[in-house]
Image 1 (cartoon, rainbow, N blue to C red):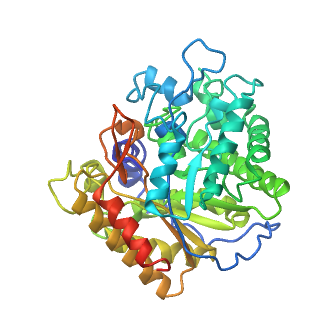
Image 2: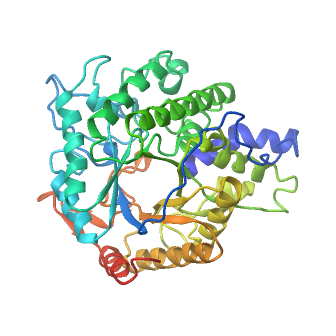
Length: 445
């Protein structure tokens, strides 16, 4: 979750609770599967999943010029046009027209899994108009991974909607669009049918918990609403229903498919003196768990996206370190806390008893040495959790190549590779060399 959003969350939501209703926010209840839970199959032992990931809007060029039949826009394009986010442009890092450059970088790393997403707007730029060429291209990407001995993981939604779902009436935009669920079901079935020959692992939604908070509470992401708790709860319910729809469709289309839910899961630290009733702490735990509780029974695996820890105190939410002047913080002012990953893994395993993949773990930095230390220390904490019985099946550094980082623009450098804007080459960073050598030496952590 972005720090600017957290500050908005505090001013608009948490501060009144803290002043007027101390102690009113209680801890999440223990997880209880629904009465009719999905019976997921046991996941057999496989070689450890070393991988990395990309996201379509962050990486892909449009591939079509404005005015052409298949040119498209997403809600994020519109959000930027409204002045709410930095403009990404139509080229990004050319992962659509030059996917082979991404694949060559993945092969350089020596990983055995690669997660990429499909852009719904590219496939369906206008309601009911389907770009079959784009569908075939995504299927080709998956096939090329498979041919290279790399297991493709496909994310069906990585934060962006087609602009025709982004209603001008923001109260009916995105997850609250009246026709969203039927449109989504058709989209999911279309994508799975096109890719299922080579894709076994699907992610219905990437970090829906973070996107909902950012869009309906913090006003930091589309649809950009500030403190709309009623709409937020409705959007969460719709999102969870869509997740469950996608999981069912995936299993109908491919019987041996695996469904992975991926969530943003910071480690929230208690601040007893600054938060004596634990209201702030409990609220942040709800942010971690509420959506996942609604869908966990449909998941064969749970993906943990872990980046930082943060103390749940008013001052820490309102003010953050800036830049990398402190060795314990990233470019975005996120606290580097490897032990937080250990605690999150223990919490998720204890709550859900599902196999876990560390689906994102990364650092925005321009320091190769700092990046290597970050990955080394987080992998050590992953091993610590595994030695204590936590069933961790994979580890994916975020991300393959420096790219557009949503409302933070192009400044944060998360990539294992940098991007040459002239040649479009992916240039290995020191951490890419380190990761390559590490997984070659330790194929099983």
